[in-house]
Length: 327
Image 1: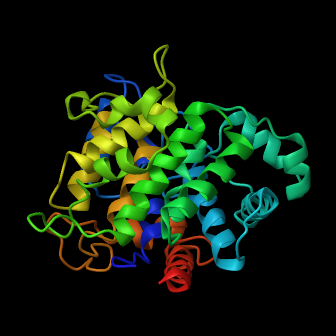
Image 2 (image 1 turned 135 degrees about the vertical axis):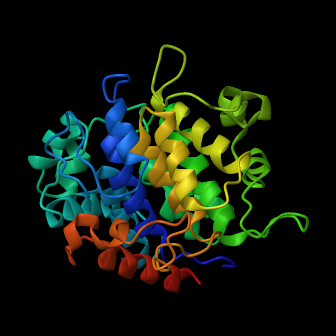
């Protein structure tokens, strides 16, 4: 692994928790909130999701942590039961946090075991849940493994063309970020090559149906939502590709600002993008003493209100274990 990223889960958590305040907000009604969020002075309360308190992350991070733990604690072949057990266990461990979709939240609250999860889950969602938790699969050592495992875990809850494709895209981009060196004329932080990497390695049927998201002429520049033309899973990875493969911001704070300004499912896009780019950019979270265009210290310190069981220390610990296992 050329670019290990022990901060992967911490970046996912920060992006998720900070951008959660603006998820699907409505303008001009919530313009004042947006203006405050873009100042990067503190975590903010979402105007309607009042059960998700400022500074707390959501399903994007919790399920990413669970997936990372499957890879840390087990050896291949990985199984659906391993993932289902991990999702249930981490949900309980985190206090049955709010922040999941309403129906999935209710399902998890009445589910006690991974076996029960597999027996009763609706596997046919076409939304972005399988993609939002797929960043950790980039650590797997080969492209076939990355595609196999990201697809397998997606089938449990998102066994649809949109769900499977979006998970594979995120996992492949993560693998590139961790293992592949950019062209010699590019900065080390550049992930522009992820576009061609996905075109080279994705299944033919994926590219026939959704390959347009990699077209440089189709740059995503609007709110990330689902609509009659495409599900939010496709909108999400389209936005991620646009941010990472065609846009090279000088720092993570500017990148997060642009994601928040775009609107829609801001926390999922932020969690994925920050999880992908963290290992290629300067370690800005740890260099919190320099306040010039860097993440301010509260974003790590106040994450989960500093709870050592779920906050920055925990995410760093799990991220470090993940990188150590696959280094």
